[in-house]
Length: 196
Image (cartoon, rainbow, N blue to C red; front, side, top):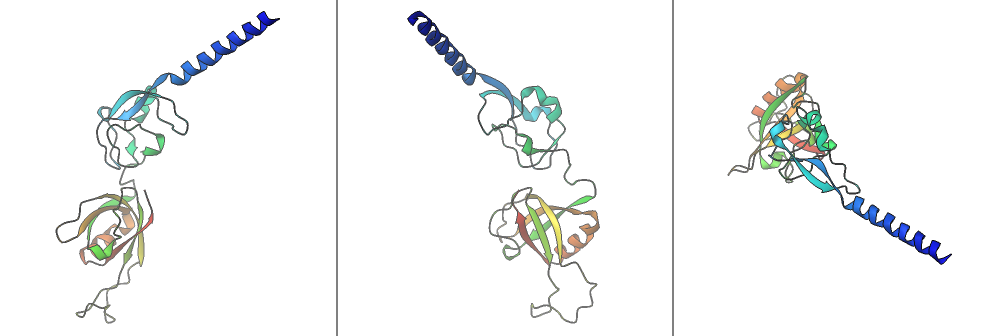
């Protein structure tokens, strides 16, 4: 009887050892080899394969799916040395069909102090024109403009010496000309609604 007990203990030990070996096995997954900017198409040269252990809570893309990843677009900035996950990919180009990409220059008081990130959902608030005293001009005969326009941040520059920041935003084609005109007149205030 004790012999049977020893056999069961040995079998249990072997089974546990096999499970530990399997947990310690690495698998090939896709990682980023070059920085890919938000919205850019992913090239084969942007990818590399690394062998890592499967980890709870991570869902990296297996190396065997490389061909499916190439040609998709980055849904966020991708940095070298990071594992690639599905949430970082999108099939939509930036700007997507029906959108326009517009660069606007904003003064420090026209955007949040926190650094903007590509993919941030924002609202471009159109402020009234100002008179000579710097207050809204009640006599303005300009055509009425939308009070706010939804947009998505596609990229930003570092603040210039005067503090101004240039921001690329994707807006609907219908709003593109309004945003360009209002930005040129300094009448846009950017409000972040959702972080990318």
